[in-house]
Image (cartoon, rainbow, N blue to C red; front, side, top):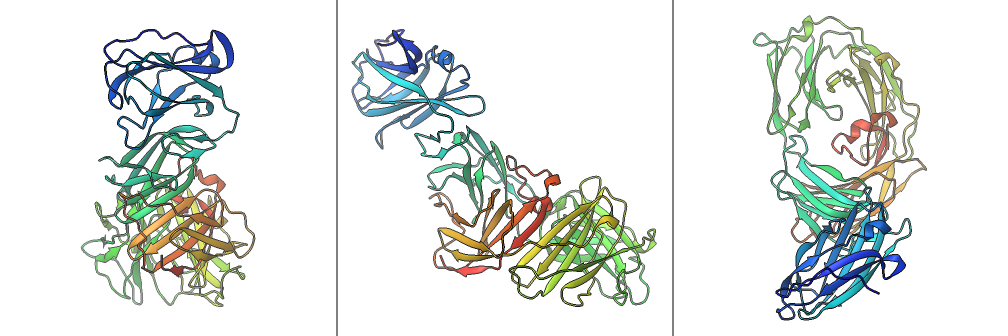
Length: 546
């Protein structure tokens, strides 16, 4: 049995896809009917076609919120492939389609959450002079059945939704136009960011791998399950920084004292060092790496001969909301640290036991940050040069007024690293880490894959893999643990960070999230990910030639 077509237009070809839950005899599936006729065009030419979903399909699938029609045909055929969402109320939509070639019509139904409900497919050659009626069965799919996009071949077991990818420079947060965004592994499903740095995809089965290529670098997010992804591209061009202390007089220093200035965003600590007795008002550095704002400035007066806990000879902190990058290099003025109210520094001793995967320790570092009300991180512990024996470090902490404190401790054998983060409402509540995460080792690397092994069992939340070739970087994020990954094909329109025949360094950083940090894999903050961790372990680099 068949559904009746409402009308035919004698002057052009007309295609009606009328989906219904019963056609004469009721059926357990829906039925889509395609009809064509009354045309004066010739085969293999384009003609205007009206497409309708019909009105009864919604009765069969009452939770349907989106009805997608995909039309494919032989390679090179005009007008196909095409994909569009049809009005679920049955209104007709005009579409140009070719006649005289076999076309595949596919209905896919989804609810408001993107859950795959039903599908129907038929193949037919449309004839301009025929009154053809094509039945298309639309059947419910079993829960959990993966959706495969008829146009792109992308597949996923999760919801099918639209996806927006916004690409920006990392620190300065400027939109990157012309970035190539690729989905999946084939390199064939791509879009290019517009002047606002945005690329959009209308129908994406999730989870999905998202790859962004721009300016010779690449960032990938593997298994992404959200609908909006912000991708910060690497920004590594150093910028000059200038700090003026109590201008024009300069800082007050006693005999044997010096002033050190530190800039930090809670992830990176960069210093503008001073010499003993140097009371010049202006301190500058020709090349500090970019940091997104706000950036904290800490100025500390010290005597190198003092032992921990070092006395407070002068401490001052300030904030630079704009950060430090090409659009706003730091150029700030602060008061004289020596005239600030004195604090009583705290002593914290770190003793690092043997760490799985590390050679004998060569370096132990600890930074403590005070987190201000505006979300800025000020360094309140500088690196004391006491490392006796090699696995121990004493540090001095300035207990300033703050919302909270964060300790970041790092142990390294020069090649690999083990890191621990600890957070507390008061500086006095921080303590030496009792355990350090085991370090992985990269076991194989090539132009198509990367593999690594853990030195000891550990519960990880995800990893970040990095492939560095000269000045170009490919960073791959995963929010699930793993021991291997496959690199996708690079789209023809993109520039790969990995050129054949050149030495490339590969490493992997496995991490655990701090449950209280608020990280969301559905809307991940890739730039500030290190501020949301509780543990991280980084392998030594493995050099290979792709």
